Length: 146
Image (cartoon, rainbow, N blue to C red; front, side, top):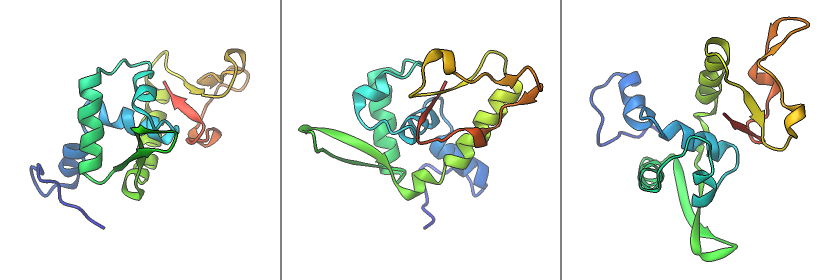
């Protein structure tokens, strides 16, 4: 279902998408949700160091724009958890493409699997074959993109 953002600047689809996810933090919060982070404190542990007030604003924005949902935490009814809606999950290929672009064009970046020991961490290139590491090697449900 197509949804119109109240802050939409024009009918350009790129401008419309950027109006929703084009700030400095929103795609990083979505990345974390794709890595199964759900709780406010979990998002704060991401290496980029988002401030609590900015995180609150971005989570609220994602919910208001139908990309995420907010529910009571079944482990602690005083807290809430966040998860992506189908609309939010549809951004997974975009995030993958951006991650691949970063791997291909930016020095000193890597994708680190969340549940792997540091010595097993894949590098951005395979020195024996000099082939680029591609996103199909990663399960977005198990990794944290750094």
